[in-house]
Length: 318
Image 1 (cartoon, one colour):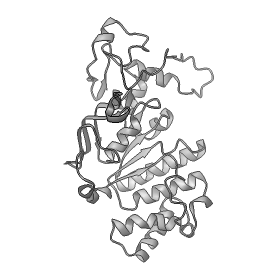
Image 2: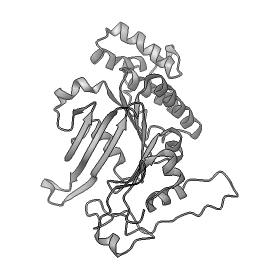
Image 3: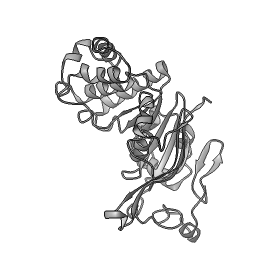
Image 4: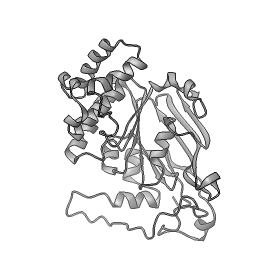
């Protein structure tokens, strides 16, 4: 196993409700522990509102954590000032869901890619533009595209541009937050293949946030499943998809479309709605919707434990 690049311990992010938090707090991320290794892709999956995108933004320090420790390259960054973070910014980049919203419509594509090279990379404007053209070719576009503007490209092409900008400073880690969910299915495969080829060449690590389990299975080395701000299961891709241990993971995987029309797989339909993150239920947060819940689940929070080698789950009966 490679060296840990990112280590998260006891990470929490609470958003206050109302002025001075008199209405309580939304527990978007609640005691999350994660490790991302060099050259690895860690997928984070779950329903909308489970906190997976918030974890990505906390790791990048786009949000300040309420509690917990974030260590990147051995350095604790959870409470560094923006001035102290600046030297680390080049090593931690992001690719957002909407490629059009993440690009400045008033800047040419070449200028958008060249900007971090000038600010963080110390290149001259001329050197940066030349390198931007090379980066565009790396992601499958022509060098002449540098003179065009974002509105002149398709969604898939714009996401390639966003990836070119993200890799411009040769980062150690990229947070891909729903990076393919806004694209057509055929384009999704192209972008996933591009990310894979870049990783083989540069050894960059990906924190891949997505609700698309098929994509996550294709690109990830390990997978973490989140529910109501907490990780409920984590393990290698093969282990988790072959033998999910948590009832929530089992329900998620049962919802993935099966290409085999003769498949007899039973769909698990969860009852009820996701509980309010401002007032999560006692005990196991999943127990109100769990088909196997007992009285113990309603009063005792299960420990996140290693059930099999490298495969963890937060369930009394896993």
